[in-house]
View 1: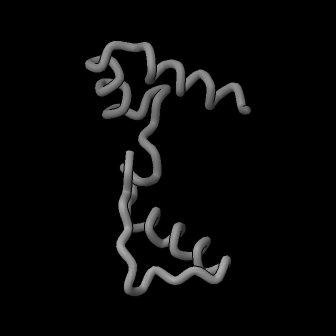
View 2: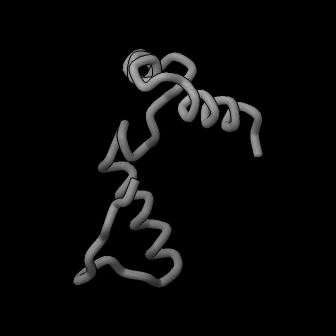
Length: 66
């Protein structure tokens, strides 16, 4: 597991919520994930991966949990 990922993960987990929001808004140390920063791109990426595995989203329900 990359060290940068662990540092960011631990920071978000143990810092006070106000501090985390401050850092996220400014993009310092902690950066929002793709789903938050660009939801349309995230959906496109999920759809491409699913289609590569022969799974279509058409006619299905999708739950974004998290």
